[in-house]
Image 1 (cartoon, rainbow, N blue to C red):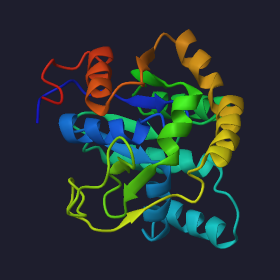
Image 2 (image 1 turned 180 degrees about the vertical axis):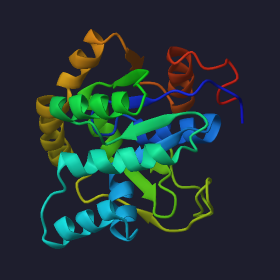
Image 3 (image 1 turned 180 degrees about the horizontal axis):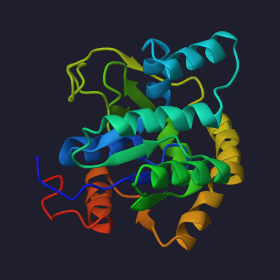
Length: 227
């Protein structure tokens, strides 16, 4: 694994823009830690900590976990350290209020957000991507019926798993609904981080390797990234 400066980043972009794939590359190539809101909530529910008990109580009632609880989870995880390459915030923030809350939490911990990487992909390309998307049930590696089929032996190239899933909402109609929510709630973060001087746009229309190189370049990571 190549050595690189520790960076705390947010990945921005519409559904199917490639954020998850590139987050895994950053984790594998640079030792970053991906803070997935969903993963943290599931782990907290069974952790037995004070925050975990609050999460379990809210989820057991069928309610949505508040932004305040998510911020507390992030604080708890950041306090554990262990991220040699920095942190990737995945699925949070999604709104301007969440962005302000995250910034305040980082400041109180003597940390900061170094970059917000925005993946730019045409809407029609997103429809094509998502309509054929298949995911390894074990590790989350993404395949596509046309551009990256599941290997002939039926095994994931990353973990060897043999079970693959399709999201029920991976279709054109559902995607357009999700895009509407993205442009309404999350896209304003692009202007927010631009004003803070940390927005890093990346052309997300290329292949996985091309996009990975673009991400490494915009973050000023060593040239050996992904090599």
